[in-house]
Length: 245
Image 1 (cartoon, rainbow, N blue to C red):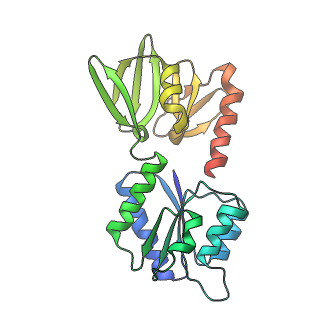
Image 2: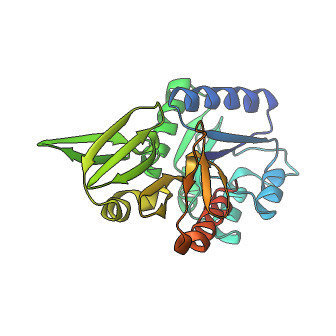
Image 3: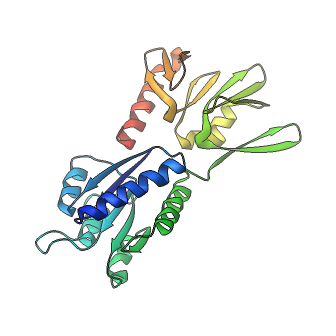
């Protein structure tokens, strides 16, 4: 899930940008949540209250009596100590490069916004964040196969084989160690090692209970090992908090 904020005092541009972003994320099959703000003050109040965003499209020029986009960026980086969110500035003027340098924006786009450039910017963010290009690799015989991390629902260990379960219902099998696969490739992408036989993608967990969890689109729950129950719940809620789910 990518959490996005659009902040522009021109309501038409804000609405058009939101629609374009929805189309881009849908085409890429990336889950997203978009909030639209019409002033920098409104965005700041929301972030001060604990809102989390991964990507912010931020206008620079607001009304004279309001905080501008450059000042909002400084607050995000300095006052809120948030160096993780990617900021994309948008403006009708080109003369802001020096002021934006210390804020380290992902990009600077000139209005009117072009769809192709906007799409390229989103792809750049997803690549940097590891949400689009990141792949899981495994060996079947002499062949090395690669699949998108985001397409994996969970891995299952059965005897010496690992079974990949994909979001479209496909499965694939290969030999390997579930523990090694988790540590080396999947842990950093918010997969949970819930049982000696199961590693699950957080994005597809629909409900978590004391001793089992449910997956989106499945009626069969997966067990959580007794020794892992406290750890899994702590990790699960930590991810929720970080993502503001």
